[in-house]
Image 1 (cartoon, helix red, strand yellow):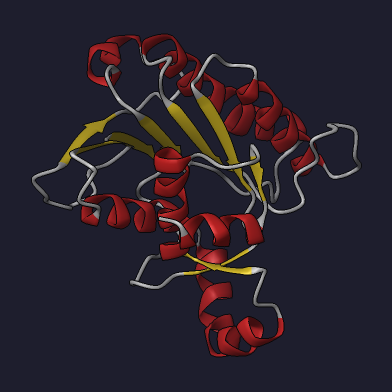
Image 2 (tube, one colour):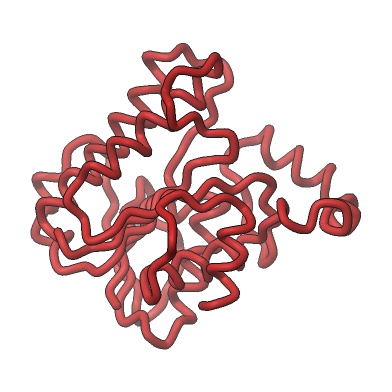
Length: 223
């Protein structure tokens, strides 16, 4: 398969990229990034892009891919709804709309989050916006759309968040991860699990479009 990844410099995206490069049935990986990753691999191609809202100039590069793993996202902390909507809904749909037109046979996998509000009516701003984004993605003419809603994510192979606050949280919580896994085994995911689950839903499909943590674990087990 041929895969395109958005957000490969983030913690989840780093893990997904690693799994894709190691998978024997992945022939090519395209990453769309704001700055070079510094990763060299015979399967890997980078497109450095400053504007993540307009892809007209690189449409020829984006065609003929089988799957998109969209791991790009921002924290809602300190943002009003208009700004968060722009960087979540508008940004995601700009890429997804382009890919749906160029690669209608593609499987599109979007990293959302636990607690996302698919009704778009709840009190939580970020959850409403994520829910609106999920719903819009499902209306696009892809072969399939899968919406991953992870909760706590354990970085396994040195993946690092791009935000200072997240890095501090993960550093402080690292000693507690074995206890959290023992107490909440169905709600702790690793970067490896998420990457394997994404590849699995492209290979085998999934019985539902929205995958919560236990569903992601089950998909990874069938990778």
